[in-house]
Amino acid sequence: MEGKITKINSRRGFAAIFTENNDYTVIEILGSYHIATGDIIQGNLETLGREYLFNASKDEKIDVFIQEIYASKRVMERLLNK
Image (cartoon, rainbow, N blue to C red; front, side, top):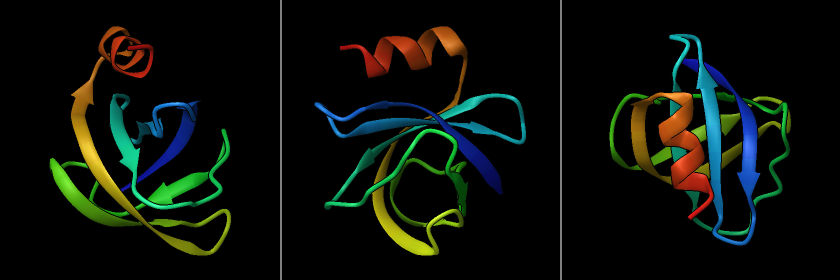
């Protein structure tokens, strides 16, 4: 599956990925990766828990914890703005 980073809360280390299913996956970034709004992310975006995803925009594997899947925009905003 593929999606695009649409929002980042660097203070919390969270990011939202708008998926090809037209919903959001919210991730917590584990480690010091340099992601940016607009980056294309590939991998298993439909399973909660720890995953390794691929940032195709930066040709880099990233270690994340998937906090929420199939989220609406409202739920995504709430999680990122805590």
